[in-house]
Image 1: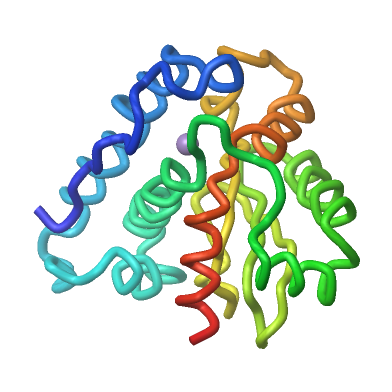
Image 2: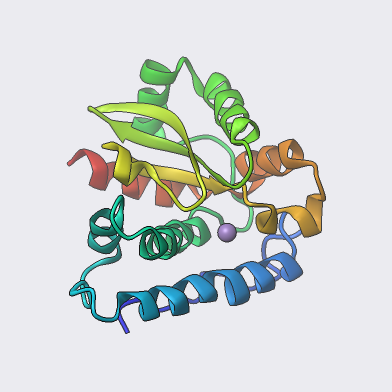
Length: 199
Ligand code: MN3
């Protein structure tokens, strides 16, 4: 088993009222588990067994689409759970806040542009804050893609597949994105990934 499903880092009901127990049960226990199980099956015989999820997804990109889709989604969801916490949101921590001011025109503009990236991703996908060429950038990607296959390192991402918000928000993706950025983001994990991406 190359891929294993991580436990949620909080209780299933810990993110209410912004993300419900029912959403987390389906999203983690069904959707993420399916990426892990399918990814492990697709890994058999590829020579990539035992590699890190980052190595698997970058190797599979462009030459094994089914494996890429599942490995990409496994990576994305490992971090998605950690990018949220109860009583999250608020301001970005010091060094990162300064970089957001420098590269993205201030924290309020960053939040608006990040939300807009999520709204503007047609169909399923993700919106991102990433480090590219030493600068912060807002990105969006379809399906299971992420910034790693576009020469960038993700430090925050939000899942805009309907399975991430439809139970709680129905078609109101903008309301989900606003709740994510204002009330759920775990800035400590963002800061840790920023540190890794820039060291
Ligand atoms: Mn998802």
